[in-house]
Length: 461
Image (cartoon, rainbow, N blue to C red; front, side, top):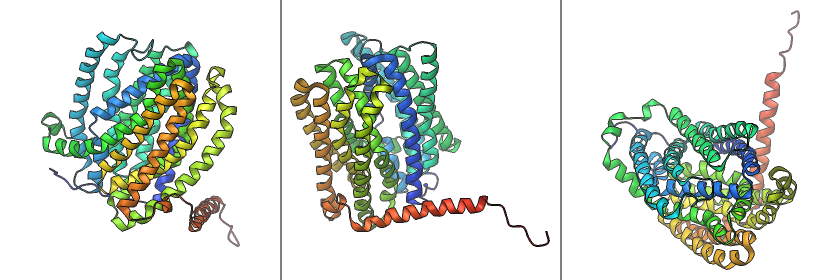
């Protein structure tokens, strides 16, 4: 199945990798916030809602048709059973399949639903380009993660919002772009991410012979594992984004736009959790079980602690940020954000715990956890959205995210044998992490200052 040595597992400092990924997400978030402001101001609540539904629909297509190759890459590369070359070669076959299936699905659905199924001004035919581009780029980015090449992954990640912001700024300066134009910019930006990811992986990652004559045993191996893990990710995406379809049905597209702005703002709280989960997953997968049991609770409880502090700051800042930047048509996004924050904090802990569960070769457990949360989502949305609208959707999502954390804690305790509270409640020993981190920063600053200082003159010089 392989014709070359598999790539080694995670390398380098855990905290250094977390810092690289956090910097990436910080830059990505700042650029996405700026382009999001331009999109909201150009399209208004209804247009923003239509754009949001297109993005969510594309994400569903990406997960369903990508066959979980990205998750499988992280697992098999770090177990040294496959190489990036194996995965990238197989990915080309899957991407072509995604293109064909998306084209057939759109051609079948649109004659029955009409061109406005996702909202006026957003053509569903654009899904034919969007889904395969996200399948390809998203998987390549996860291959970089599998190799622990976090600087390269960061460059590819930030390419998307850089290109999106550039195109939006030019279009906004000339005239207000249409929803379909904004969607086109979005697809192009993900194409840029895919191109840079492939460039970072290098020409050696492409085996033309295995693209022309696919290695079906490798594809089946990746798909078998990937689909087990990806079924949970699809359900999790439903858990995250089903609310927007329900809001569209009961409130309308403007409600989706208002809600989407609140959701996008709360994702800033995921900055640390995403950074830790991305670095932790390949490390836990390659670690022995005892090390994984030791690392996970420390990472989880401190992620929740920092996320709580960030959520409190965001709650105070939201009324100051949203109206002037997004416009007063999005004032109601503030209350939605407040109601989403408790669940967002809970979900940061879930991200760490589910990384541990996946690393132990138990992707179906994560799927069951998500099923529990999704059941809460559906019941809560149908109970709250018809009566409370956008705020009901936000409250329902928080309840579901809390249920997800509870289920993840239960599974973590059963698999690891460790007490669940150890993964949630801060411990006095954790203070040493922050002290050592501060000392490390100060030492680097002092070292840099010393290296920049002029050398002393020698006597008689």
